[in-house]
Image (cartoon, rainbow, N blue to C red; front, side, top):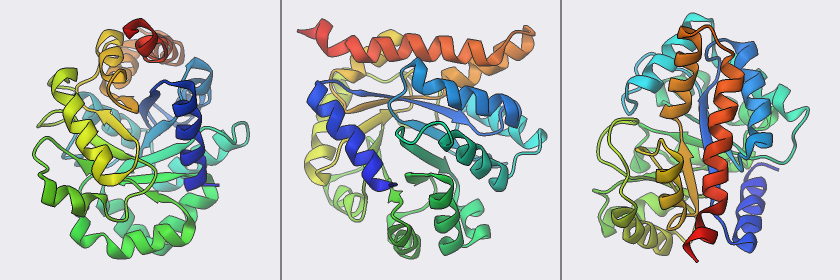
Length: 275
């Protein structure tokens, strides 16, 4: 299903008049078994799409929470194969929720574009975000993903001008990921008033839904962004939830799903409360 699963989900949400809640988790964090339980529980907690990070030792766009999540996963033995196996096992019980892989080019290059795309599609991946892949150099990857019917999802930022936005939008499918703040994840806070015109501009240039991420940690902030965007992405807070649960010797699965549930409820009701 791949790209069509993303399109179908956004079409349904548009008909319902609400934004998507998109939690991000790091595959293998804090270990493969726990990460799978979290992934399996997220749709029931209200996730509409799910971003799954594949761990990398030098995640340059990530702030401390996701950096630490990647290191925990790597220390627990996570590899690309274990990441894809986690998604494959998730698909045994869920054929509807779109899964977006998010990570860095080194891992993709090491596997090879065609093999990566084929393996990802076979596992049940619907889309791919490669944070450090410039659009000008993404042709071979885009070709491989197109052949496997996996969406290539690109990033736009506050510094993306109109000319650059045309380049970003080309061959992007599924949705565009708008980075709401200049900088890394989990540090600054998103400002919905500043995000709104940017989302409209990206949506007009691409013809695609726009998901907003970076700088969204609380239900209140998520609701504010949900009123102006097509999707709201939260990652650093959920990674911090895992770290906190570990430090307190608590159940990481329950902690993450509790937070995800509160965020999802806020996103789902955001536009109703705005009326």
